[in-house]
Image (cartoon, rainbow, N blue to C red; front, top):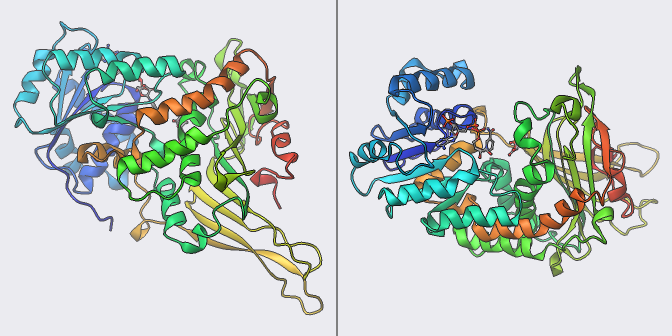
Length: 489
Ligand SMILES: NC(=O)C1=CN([C@@H]2O[C@H](COP(=O)(O)OP(=O)(O)OC[C@H]3O[C@@H](n4cnc5c(N)ncnc54)[C@H](OP(=O)(O)O)[C@@H]3O)[C@@H](O)[C@H]2O)C=CC1
Ligand SMILES: O=C1O[C@H](COP(=O)(O)O)[C@@H](O)[C@H](O)[C@H]1O
């Protein structure tokens, strides 16, 4: 059984309550937490958007979403009814001062003044500042309120600063929760446990023993229905600047003194600040970008990115970077980061390649050990060891895997990362959310790459949908004698 504790009564106010994210992720996540007994009966979920519907209309939409996104075996009519009973809806344009703020205010005022209030912005980031201003001017910000910001926090440093300033004018940083759903993944959080709860790992976690690190997040899907967003973003902004840099931080950071939010965030920030800047001189040798062309994924023919988009585009659907963390611990260790749409398979993983043992005992030097942390799917950890080949005539070696799959008790699927994050915002625990200075440090590193790409300093490669990426990406690793994980023996 999952060990769960009920959270304090709360009001969750969702701006963008009729949108895709709310219907596909937020409402199902809150339903699942109610199913696990974590949501008190007097909690309320108050949806807002401009769409002019009444409460019944919203409840009908929410019910449809649960039917679509919650599997039959965990969707009970009684629990669905109980969940729908928590819902309210206010038609509101969050950017307009003269919109129906009094209706929202009147619902909120029914609760005690010290009620935890979470404002979740599931809408376009350029609206965040104006919504905050309106919350403030309608006296809806209390010391018990917090605001959850969805990605993307900007498309570069200037836009990120504008969003953060807009919100920061009305909410102090300790009331701002920036979502990065990768941090909500159990297997991403497990990186800290693996590193710091296991002395055998801790002892070898540095350049002395580690040759290289690979961090991959590959997907078989294309841009789905989100082409208009994706084409203004691309793989670097969509995945690397946020999710994969956060994973890199957990792999590379020094041990924090505690799991207190700012202690962990300070340790991550130190990694981001130690990332070697990529310059016009190095961008061509340290980065690869590409777009998928038509191909076959999972036995299905799929069109190329440009065909899907129906227009020319300079947006990458694949990005790979060789990054360097300039600290004594990581001196000379490349961190290869890559992400792809329409890849051969869906996989997010961290691969740690250890140095080979300098021994002549067995003839050829045995290969270095390899640790694979599988973020998804088949969540688990695999350590590749050299063992004696059980043959009678010669002392030869082969590799064997110590492989453990990490499961929830009872074999239950892992909760979706939004389930943890939505309730952490209620609990007031920001450890899995991104602090402003982390966002800015990540942009400081990513921006020069994006600028160089926009100036075509690095040629756009292509790769067939259903492949592992462009041929050129192997060159990023080849000069250090490395290979991408799927190419390793
Ligand atoms: N969808 C996803 O999978 C993911 C989305 N995100 C982020 O979440 C946010 C929302 O995305 P998504 O749900 O896909 O977007 P949608 O376009 O589907 O939804 C946007 C929502 O915002 C509402 N809205 C728009 N303008 C206003 C306004 N002025 N005042 C009040 N409400 C408004 C819309 O309702 P109405 O028109 O009725 O006002 C709608 O409910 C974005 O920041 C996106 O980047 C992040 C990760 C994944
Ligand atoms: O944030 C995003 O993440 C998803 C991939 O998430 P995962 O949990 O399935 O690995 C990606 O599809 C989307 O483009 C991006 O915005």
